Amino acid sequence: MRPAARLGLAALAFAGLVALAAALFEPRGDRAAAEAALDRWRSLPGSAEPHALGSPAHKRLGDALERLFASFELESAHQSTPDGLRNFVARRLGSSDLPPVVLMAHWDSVAAGPGAADDGAGMSVLLELAARSARLPKTPLRTTIFLATDGEEAGLLGAKAFLATHPWAQSGGILINMEARGTSGPVLLFETIGNQQQLIDAARGALDFPAAFSLAAEIYERMPNDTDLSVFKGAPGWHGYNLAFIRGLEHYHTARDDAEHLSPESVAHLHSSARALLEYWQQHSAGQDFGNWEPRARAPHTSLFGSTLVVFPSRARWPMTLALTLFGILMLGRSLRAWLGGWLVLAVSAGAALALTRLDLASAWALGAAAWLATALALEARAAVGLLLVLNLLSALFLPAALPQTTLPLLAALVGEALRRILLQSSPLWWAVPMTVVTTAANAPVLLALGWVQGHPGGPLLGLLWALLSIPWAVTVHLAGAQKHA
Image 1 (cartoon, rainbow, N blue to C red):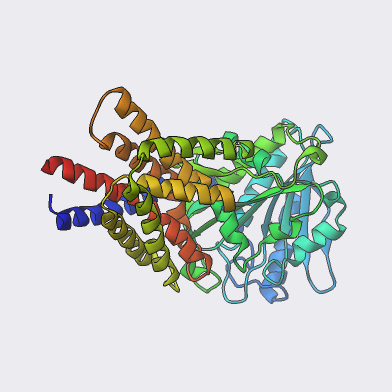
Image 2 (image 1 turned 120 degrees about the vertical axis):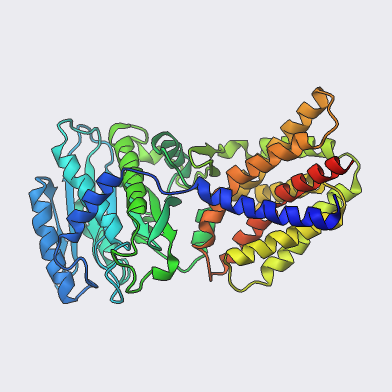
């Protein structure tokens, strides 16, 4: 196969990677439950209008929420201030004195739009699960608090008031915050606060359709955005999750954040995710003494195929990195082109990323093409393995949250190479194909987040990672073409 044909096939392979990765993460959940939740929210006066703090629609909606919470027959302890701020807080007592689990969303909107997604979607789910909790005959192990904050768009005012003065906030707890930075797409578990290891271990057991990768939190921390969960960072005894769907960014904080543009499938995914986490923590006693939880314990993780959450124990970072590096060295041997090729790919692709001022899928495509060209210049297919070794070492040293995106493809390549040698096979496709498949599975969440960081400084960094990890597709096509030609 001629080089030009291999290059064309590599471009098609990259397009296939984009399409397959996107298909792995589509919103899934109970559509009927989501529709019921949305109907309840939309029936409230003022919910379909902009209801920013202090507006007439805000007053009407607040009055309606107060009546609705009273109908749930839960214990209530609402908060209000003279300037019109109103937090609606209700709870169902548990059978133990374990720290509570808190489901949180904000009910105010920006003045520019009605906030059907931000945060009408979260409020729809909160009200549905509060009503459901009140009807359950079995008392949960943990006390469950339903917290509808006000003034989030005006500066996280309701969350600050709850943490500072509400008596139910003094014991700490496990927060599940629901947000939206768009109007569609799957729900991304994009941030945790407190002990990430405990929280992600729980999410792995609770979520049926997880969309999460630990690098998202590192990117988010560098963005000029906050949610109500930000208020609880560093507060003693508080640990929690941030959930949001992030497609349809062009509708965020505009008049188009309305019922017409809101995806019911996304609300269904938010409902199923929040309910799964809520029910897990309602009935599990893990973390009964939060004082023994290491507040900054990290757990690098990523979703595979949209159905499995792979978690790396923090203690395994260096043993695993060093072992993979050793096996990688044995695989690359003395091939200078394989080692230098990895650095060449990194340098060329980094240059392309730094040249970007905005990131979208077209830019990601361009980065993938640049990465392929650098690989072709390296004239050594194993340069992809050399690149993964370089990235894996850099991740272990400077950005452990990115380890799953590099370690899993590298591990697949080395396992494939070991099988090739054991079975006395000659084709390098034995290691290239597993590397390609696992790259797709481990890095699909990165594609999900590309739209989320569009226009922010972290965008090119995320696009760079995506482009670099598209290289296994190009290498596999290159090898298949070369083998067929031979």
